[in-house]
Length: 105
Image (cartoon, rainbow, N blue to C red; front, side, top):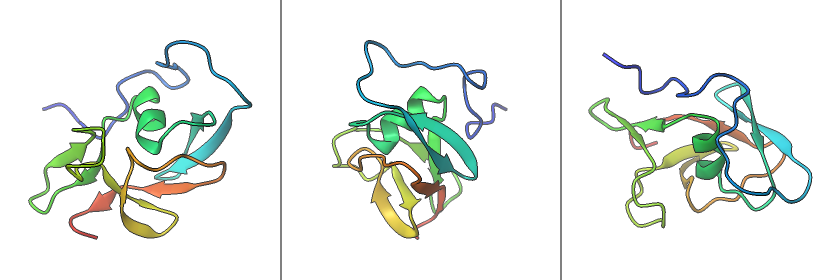
């Protein structure tokens, strides 16, 4: 069975397309540094780093980005201690701490 919580790309490989503007920075996701750029959402930065899931539903199944517009709430994660934060609607900031969310909170 495939581990859906593991990054899908080799460490250091960036999957972003196009030009990045501004100075890049890092934030933490479950203790690992993730590269990001100004204007990216948490979801965009996590996907670019190869992370496809960042939450476990109440039944334990992995969840990640689904609708990408803030309607479905599948991308919920814990951002700077705040549970139920939609990764697709939250702009990433330098030093932000993001953790996987288990269940409803």
